[in-house]
Image 1 (spheres, rainbow, N blue to C red):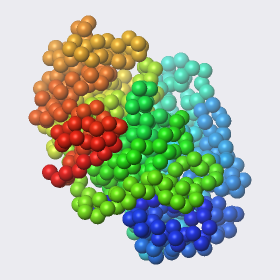
Image 2: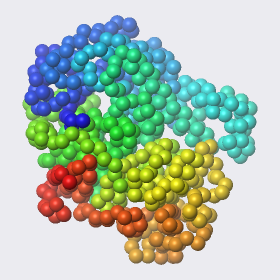
Image 3: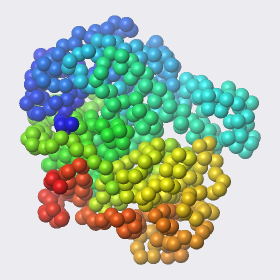
Image 4: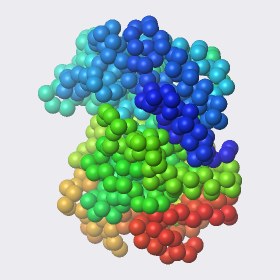
Length: 633
């Protein structure tokens, strides 16, 4: 598939007489795609039942006749004010019992049956009207599920829905009491109707209760998305997508993605560096105008898996954003680098947010490809450069990486339910391993926990996979490649109980976790040979050869055949040493990347990226600051 560019456009924000010129300029800039409509409900239906779709008809016609392909968004992320009058109890409620009020966006509860039907209705009306349009070439459901902490809602609708969900899961209240261990603290229930939501308890709620609510809440996102897909499909053969976010893990993206043809995500490297990466102040200063070298790449690989190979960047940052603690401008060259980075990981399209900077409301400080006065913003020059380069570039060439990394949303919920130490989290563990693989010059495929065939990989890593389902466990035990597990692998059952036998209970690894402890951040345990344990370590029983151990003699990575168990959270140096050992056991070349430089292979192409603000010497020669080198291999 040809690599293409696009943008996000809001015709309802601009005088109609400007639409045609905007469309002409988009085409002249080399753009193919234009996303519209995802926030337009109040203009589509200003009053209940009063549909005013004429302006949308004309906008789609104008854009399409200019030669653009339209991605039409359903407007359900921004229900209009009258919707709240119709459904007074539709607002999400936070964990402290406060309503998420009208006045911005995403102010609905996924569990609310009335709003679900309203969403079906508006989606159906759009699908009936535009499903056969020759200009609507793709759809987007809603916008950024889970953004602004909106997946978990503690509303009356959620309570009712959760009770119904629990009945379907357990059938009998005694079965639930037994599974959750409710004999502890006399927490036993006589009826499903006795069960409340796990918030505002005196101390922590039962972790089994919390975990069940996390699973239920994820299922509500899946249900909400599925409802819209069901309304679109009878009227349109165009692919359907959703635009996910960076480090939003409150719902299972793999489950949402099963109903969609394309996964997209919204990439804001500079905003995420301050807001979500979890980087040190030194790291933030070093990459303040470039973004973290691995955060975007991680999500590219993740959403390639969510989309089963088909994925886009729906919103690419082209300049300063408005929502992070600090909002610098990207270095010259970074918009081009970010775009090529997405294509290096297999993206079909990269769309820039947004076409013209808004002069009003919440995002007026958010840069676009045009300034508010319609003149080119600095990023437009780099878009023009991308257009020239793409004219001679090959089509997207997906290829299997040598390394697979399993990511499991349920494990993220399990770690957050019972972290055992401040700041310990599953995403951080997996991301640190991913970064170490990239520092070793390796390309990575991220896989869902439902993946069972590892025959094409030399290494499979499953760090922190709290619950190891029987099918995945058997597949990993029988994998012909090197398998790395831990820490806390197989440490809890589906109902959040400690299993017997004790973890990891894995064939060809004769070790048992006998005790666990979390460490203060200012008390790391140095490793013999360099590096340290940070945050968490397990005591192991069993006579298995040690790869890494602390200066106190405590094993923290052991190996038996081609099976490795890492029983600790390691710092970067410790992880690098673990990757060196992993490569040596797996017939992989370890290439220590210069600081800030990363490489990625995609089909018959190899890319080298310099994320620093200085020239860097590499195997490919000197990389200028904020630059990318692409070559055929």
